[in-house]
Amino acid sequence: MEQKTKINAEDGKQELVITREFDLPLELLFKAHVEPDIIEQWMSTPHSPTKVLKLESKKHGSYQFETIDAKGNKYGFNGVIHEFIPNRKITRTFEMENTPFGVQLEFYEFEKLTDDTSKLNMHVIYESVSHRDQVLKLPFAQGINMAHNRIQEIVSKLK
Image 1 (cartoon, rainbow, N blue to C red):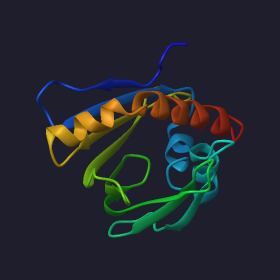
Image 2 (cartoon, rainbow, N blue to C red; image 1 turned 90 degrees about the vertical axis):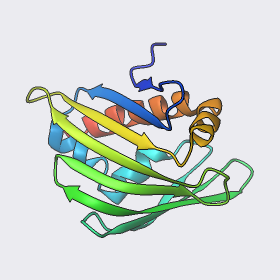
Image 3 (tube, rainbow, N blue to C red; image 1 turned 45 degrees about the vertical axis):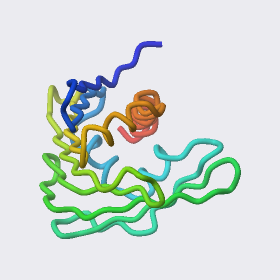
């Protein structure tokens, strides 16, 4: 199955550029990133439910999510929202608790392609090249592609 989410990782750089086109209007794609009930649906899997513990979708807001794996282990992730422009851009930090990866900086840009299609451009900056490379050794590409597929599937029902 083709990976619709494209990940560009240049050698020697501490960043990733991730792009994905969706058959969703821009407003619905953005909504999928700021509405707790929608986020819980697309971030959860049958064996790993995700809960939104806190989400302040605004400049200087913050968020805190928790996921539980199949063995019952809890993993938290959180961050601060630095820029919030509805239907255009979210700039935030992201930290996965109890991991060696540290805090990353994420720029989400939402782009209208047509009335019914849109594009998400993500620019992720890691603390170091080695941290970025460690993340790429995980099933990161498959996971983000699966999450984006779930956004498409779940949010298209809201049209």
